[in-house]
Image (cartoon, rainbow, N blue to C red; front, side, top):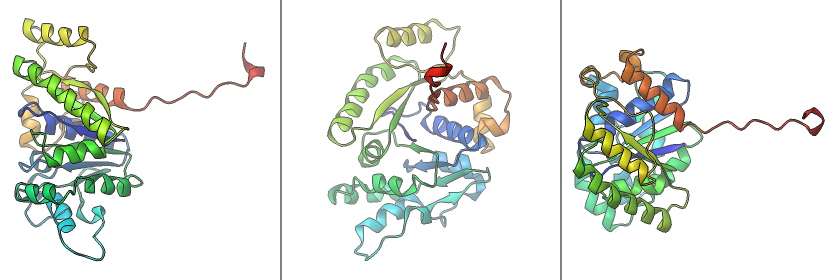
Length: 268
């Protein structure tokens, strides 16, 4: 399953959500990949820490090769790095993504990521794509490539206003480029259950019929420690309340296993 974590608004927790869900997948024995398409590289630093260097193969180099005339491109797997966590790999970001953006867009390379994910599908059970806070070439590439879209939401009026435009954009890409794309749901982040505004705002989204996922992710200083130590919550503090919320959210997104029907002779 390929998930893109997307919101055009910055600071809503895209990297945190992508990396923590990916880490939980890996901890459960699923072969997992994170693709960092944001030139800021927050997911890359979160998962690699001090091992994140400019010398690493990265996603910018993967895209850049498509601009050159070569008989055979290197496979996407050549740009992937292992993390210190079992089953968890990373296709790192690079600041060069910003420089390449207009060239890739003008040369119509929008399907390159989709082609790469088709190659990688046999190697990974779960793929999480972190995106920049804009509907640009990289975000469109991710939405065209992915099967599911997770939308972080941080319970303020600006986020809510932007949400409707975002959903329209996702539906347009689904209609034009990726019939398999589905909005998996809205991930409520930094939720404060004792405050009236977050409760009211989330309830209004639910009343409108929008796909709000549960549980909501609470606010905790522990997530800042997680960033500082480059340790997703499942590795930093497995029993923490926020970790358990991430686990419950992750498990809710897993495909439901179908129960085989009993033969007619065994039915009562």
